[in-house]
Image (cartoon, rainbow, N blue to C red):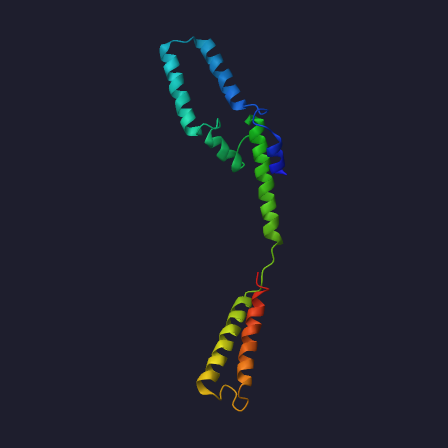
Length: 161
């Protein structure tokens, strides 16, 4: 939904509220005190510092962090910042719901299937080395028993979450 909203708006249609507000504030400040060479140089230095910190995005990164952490004052935010904050809240809710919906296995599940695979392997190796044990007298059926134990362990891995 957020992607659809994002793609519906062209960059030409969007208005840069922060730049407009900053320009209005600068004009008001210049009108109030008059402009001279020192004031223009100070304003240029401030603008350059602001541009360096915002990385040419037009938004102060402190404001973005405040929005993402949901600590910003909603009354002083631009419409874009409010939309960004709403999207962040929506994404947070979606992630929390997904985490709550996941099921997990009991704590004994993984050790059990690992143990079954190891026991089956030891069973088969024991039969190959002795030729008669672990159960004497059933001969090659020991191989089948070992492989069935291994197979049960592998089948349990399919239900592992």
